Each structure stands twice: as C-alpha cells, then as structure tokens.
Amino acid sequence: MATTQTHIRTQWDTLHRNGPFPIKQHLVTRLESNALMPSKFDRYNDAATEIRRLISDSQLQQHGFRPFGSRWSMSSIAHQKDRVHQNNLMHLDLPILPADLHAQTGYKAENLFFFQCGNTVREISQVLEAHGKSLKASGASNGQTIAGCISTGVHGSAWQEGAVQDYIVGLNLIIGPKPEDVVYLERHNKPALSDAFAAKIQARVIRNDNLFHAALVGLGSFGFIHGVVIEAEDRFLLHRYVRKIDKTMAEQLAVTMDFINSQFKITEEIDAQGNPLLPYHFKIFINPYTNDNQYVVEAMYKKTPYHTNYPDPLAGIEKSLYRDLIYLLIKISEKFPNSIPWFIKRLEKEILPEVDPAEEKIIGTLYEIFWDAPYQGPAFACSVGVDHKDSIKALNLLTKMTREEGPVPGIFAMRFVRQSTATLAFTRFPITCVIEIDGIIWKGTNNLISLESYGRRMVEVLKNNQIKFTSHWGKNLAWDFPGLIPYMYGDKAKQWKNYRNSLLSDEMAKLFSNDFLDITGLSLKEANIPPNLIVSLPSDSP
Ligand SMILES: Cc1cc2nc3c(=O)[nH]c(=O)nc-3n(C[C@H](O)[C@H](O)[C@H](O)COP(=O)(O)OP(=O)(O)OC[C@H]3O[C@@H](n4cnc5c(N)ncnc54)[C@H](O)[C@@H]3O)c2cc1C
Image 1 (tube, rainbow, N blue to C red):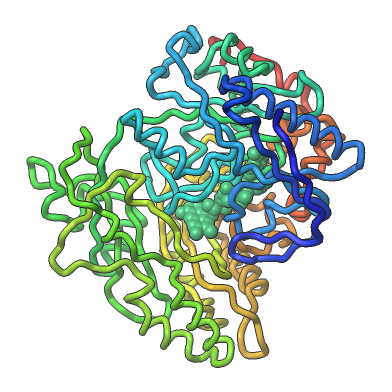
Image 2 (tube, rainbow, N blue to C red):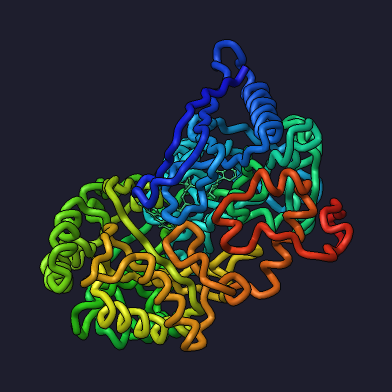
C-alpha cells in the first residue's frame, strides 16, 4: 500500500526562499513497491486511495490540504497554513493503447501519454524520448512537476504553440474522500480516452469543455490533480541562435510578430524565395539600465524530422539567468543601491546568453535546449502578460519605473505565447507577451525599494496607463492589490469560481483553498451559480 510520512513542521519555503511560511504538517506519499504490486494501474489506484484517506483525515481535523510540486513558484500559491503534500515521489506513467481511445477521438494513441502528477518535465521528456516523441513546449528549464506546471500556466516562448496546459487533453482529479470523488475530465468536443480507460483508473467521467478549461489552470485549488493525459508529438530539433539586433527592429517584431516581412534574417533560416522563416521561439533580453540601441535576442527554428547527426548542445547552453555570481551583486547592492546599474552592466555577459560572433547555432531537442536551472539560492521573478501589441508601451513604462524608483537587481526579458483556452490562463491575449524581470531577492532599505513595493508599483503603473495585463500565477506581485483579479480576468474569474464551486462541495472548496486564493478573492463563492455546469456532454453537443 502507498504510505504517507507526516512531518510535524512549523515552516515551509519555496525553492528560492520567498517565505518562510507557517505550516502544521508536511506530508510525503510513497507508492507501493514495484515488487509487491507489479501492475502500474494497481499502484496508481492504490495511491488514489491514499490521497482520499489524507483528504478525509484533513477534513476531520478541519485542516486545509495543498499539494505542491517542485516548489518552484515564487508567489505563495503552493503554500497552505495547515497541510502541504509533496508529490514528487508519485511519478508513474501509464500506457495508453489504441484500444483505450474514445470512439470519436481525433488523437493518435501513439501521441497520448498518461503521467502521474509528480513527474517532472525532465522525467516526462525522458519517457517521451524513449518513444521518439517530445513535449510541444516547456518553460526555460525542466525541474517543475507536470501538475505544478499546469496549475500556474507554465510557458516558454513558443508563440505558435502555447503553454504547458495547452497540450493537456485529460485530467484525473481527486475532489474528495469518497470513491466517486475520483473524476476524469476531458473536453466533450475533443474527447481522448474511452470510458473503459477511465474505469481502469476507477474514475467517473465528465466530458465538458468549460469545466475542463476551468480545471486546466486550477491554481492548486480544483482538487488534487492525480494524473494528466498529454498530447506529445514526434521528436524535433531546434536550431538556436543568439544575436544582437537593432532595438527598433526588436520592438517592431514584438508589436507585430511579423517575421516574414521583417529585416530580421538568419542566413540559414530562409525559405526558397529568401524570406525569413517563422521562428518557433523568440525572446528579447533588456537591461533596463543601459541606453544601448541594440537588444540581445534568442530565436529558435523547429526542424523535422529528427536526426541524430548534431554536436552535443549541452556545453553551449550552460549560460543561465540564475548565476551564483549574481548573489554577490545583491549583497553589494543592498549596501550600495546606486551601484546596481553599474554591476548589471559589468555582469551582462554572465547574465545574458552569449552572442556568438561566429554566428554559429546550437542544435538540440526541446529537452536538451531547455535544460536544468543551476541556481538554488534566493530569487525573485515578476512576470506580467500583455497583448503583444501593447508590449513595448508596457515595457517602456516598467523599465522607466524601475530606473526611477529602483534600481532593483534584475534584468528584463520578453517572451511570446499563443492564447490558451484555459479559463484563468494568464496567457489570455491572442499572442501574450510575457514581460518578466528576474533576479536575486534583495532586502528593501531606506535607500532601496522593497520587492513588495516594486510589485505594487508594477500593478499601479500598468493600471494607471490603461494597459490590460495579467500575471504569472507563480511569480511575485502585489497579489492583494484591490480589484486586481476582476481587472485582469473580468467575468472569466466568476466563471472559474462557478465551475470550481459546482465540482467541489463547500467543504472541499475550503479544504483546497489557501491564503493566496483568499487574498485574490478567488475562494469566495458567487451567488446564483447556474445549474448543470458539470454535466457530462455528448461529443456532438455545442
Ligand atoms: C528556475 C526557475 C525557472 C522558471 N522558469 C519558468 C519558465 O520558463 N516559464 C514559466 O512559466 N515559469 C517558470 N518558472 C515558474 C515555475 O515554473 C512555476 O511557478 C511552476 O508552477 C512551478 O512548478 P512546481 O512543480 O514547482 O509547482 P509548485 O510551485 O510546487 O506548485 C505550483 C502550483 O501547483 C499546485 N500543484 C502542484 N501539484 C499539484 C497537484 N498534484 N494537484 C493540484 N495542484 C497541484 C500547487 O498547489 C501550486 O498551486 C520558473 C521558476 C524557477 C524557479
């Protein structure tokens, strides 16, 4: 049987030490051994029984219960003051065979994979690799769990692909202590797996597009995500280039995303007519403290079919935003804030990806290019999502505020992501430009703005200039800013709450809430919830 160790603790923290936060219990569940329970389905169902038991026990003690993945989120979204549950040892993958498909499915069995919640992007990529497959997109590195990724909406800069939740086609949730609280959700318009498969994981099926879209980015509050079905694709290669280009050209690309008619040309990445190809990934790096008329940009082009004849890419992609050297910078800058711009300029080479004067490219799979994040120390990250058409206006406002009211020890980047169907995805614009500032946590002083005030100023500056924006749920911001969520999501927030409160009983909605949900107002139940929100619909209904 799966077993859970209960550690009585008073504190819990994120990987990058954005806390500490108070807790009562830290739970760790381990699966039954392979030797004693050889069937993967038996081990998976046995784990579900254990999670139901933990939910029941939390309910009896009137405790909240919150699963967490790799603790990579920097907001308090993964924290619960009573009980937190560590999922990383729950990392089975279950086979999906052609016979398991729904009769009306458009998916191919060879592309569908079932992963338990605690699998990391790295583990999933290794399983897929063994089948000659790849994820469609990931974040910049690979240590997050799959359940953690979709709960906050993790993205890269695959502007035609979308974020991680966008290739999830099925969700297995545990929404309470009873056997019937194990549910399997899919879109009714795009079903994937048969009822017989759902029976193998002892789940009640609900096919309903709107419910599925609400649960996809569930903020850890839509029940326990036990497993997900992902749609993978054939393994592909990425050709990665880093260049310095004119600021005006970079800005124009950000606002138009019109690569075909632009002057941004990589010699090898053109079509037969000599026009630029569309990159798979495009990212712009901005040092807010320099007046350079050029920006460093990173572009990647997708190549199929995959072949093995390319040099080892790992040595070339070691450069990372999270460098131990920056820690030294922070220590110095806490004492001498005016030195921050000077240091960032001096350390640019360490912080930014290397521009290769020989114009060489790095070739690798998605898994090889978006590799480990080596930095484990204190860090912050603020990421706001805006319509890419507003991206330069928003960037200019934020960098101006950073220069005038900071400086703060971080550097900006812009990534671009296709619109998500998930109700609370922060990638909600037709193409969302994610403007992010990453750096190492600093302490506010009389001379130096604090991270809390900086997050508040970001909200104020964008709001005061009538820019519609969202924020990465797992990043730092003034999440308690009055009216923030209605400003960002309008009716979508109400819709999300209504689906959540229809699927979860009142008691379970409370158990799966936390401070983050309370301060954002998302734990509040709306009056007059429409009936029948969570009925299972046939695939031909609208
Ligand atoms: C080095 C680094 C690089 C990063 N790069 C990127 C990037 O490129 N792109 C990007 O978008 N973000 C990035 N982030 C942010 C990070 O990827 C996200 O915050 C992500 O959600 C963290 O995943 P996790 O597994 O650590 O989940 P956690 O942070 O542990 O949890 C996140 C949320 O998931 C919920 N959750 C976890 N497991 C379950 C479950 N089984 N059931 C229900 N809810 C669950 C938690 O309750 C919480 O609400 C980065 C962070 C770091 C530290």
